[in-house]
Amino acid sequence: MIHLGDQLGLYRAMREADRPITTGELAASTGTIERWVREWAFNQAASKMILAHPDGRFSLSPEAAVVLADPEHPAFGMGMFHRLPQTMKALEHVRDSFRTGVGHDYDSHGPEGAVGIERSFEPWNRAFLVPVVLPALADVVDKLDAGAAVADVGCGAGSAVLLMASTYPASTFTGYDISQYALARARTKLDASGLGNAEFHDPRNTALPRDHSLDLVCTFDCIHDMSHPQAVIEAIHESLKPDGTWLLVDIKALDTFEENARKNPMASLMYGISVLSCMSSALSEPGGLGLGTLGLSENTAHEMALAAGFTRFRKLAVDHSVNAFYEVRP
Ligand SMILES: C[S@@+](CC[C@H](N)C(=O)[O-])C[C@H]1O[C@@H](n2cnc3c(N)ncnc32)[C@H](O)[C@@H]1O
Image 1 (cartoon, protein in one colour):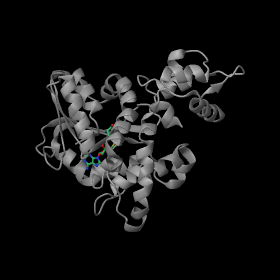
Image 2 (cartoon, rainbow, N blue to C red; image 1 turned 30 degrees about the horizontal axis):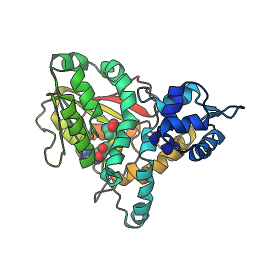
Image 3 (cartoon, rainbow, N blue to C red; image 1 turned 90 degrees about the vertical axis):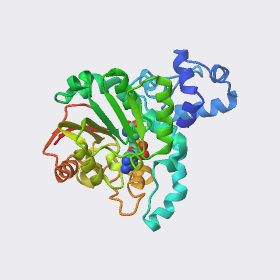
């Protein structure tokens, strides 16, 4: 029902109305049929997603308006619901995965899967990446202003690359991803942007340069999805200059199931998403490590970084509901 509210523009119309409205008004403003909208509204009000008023009208609370209908707000939450049909479709092939052990990469969720991921992470990044996250890294903003070489590994549809490329025109940015749908979307957005300082590659065709030439490598919510994360971390180490920086952003996970279950109110959701998406991706190739959504705790990330040759590992004081941020240096 949340997916429908997003895709049919029902939440957006309620936000734009900015007052309680009838299901007839909601249907008229979205080109839908009132009887269907009424049943949807009853579902949404019964679950307290929207507010039902005694006179039969419906409205959004201020919090619901930003989470459900404002893609410019960092708390916008419709990305995961955008890809709900694709995530649930994974139920069909994941039964086999339980028997074979082999999972499915992000392209198994189709082009709309890549859009859903983009819509999930872009709003927060747009609000905080440039003003908060990058300045939390030692020396990095000065280098970006002067002209730095940057890679975003597991870049998805390229939102962070394009945001940074437009903010720092003297620097060059290369996004790497194995998802053809995400890469196609990233390249389409790059063409539309007119930016000349960004490009996107599949690392299986054009690998990260292993020549210590990069100033900054970013990984946003993707190391735990990778089948061979240790090899990727080693490649990141070899790509960085001796004074370079790896910005590691990944899910705030704890070391054990007991801690995750006790301290993370979203643990159940995350273990479910892991089976359908993250762990499945991390087991999509033979010998995959299969970390999964809650598999990369700070201690695990630190150990993997040390094993790859990094010597400095610092957690950044960046507040995020789901993610942890680390500065990792050679
Ligand atoms: C949860 S998405 C995050 C995408 C993007 N960083 C963002 O924040 O929107 C994880 C991404 O990691 C990519 N990925 C998985 N394994 C990879 C690998 N070995 N190399 C590069 N990308 C990989 C997936 O294709 C997917 O696009």
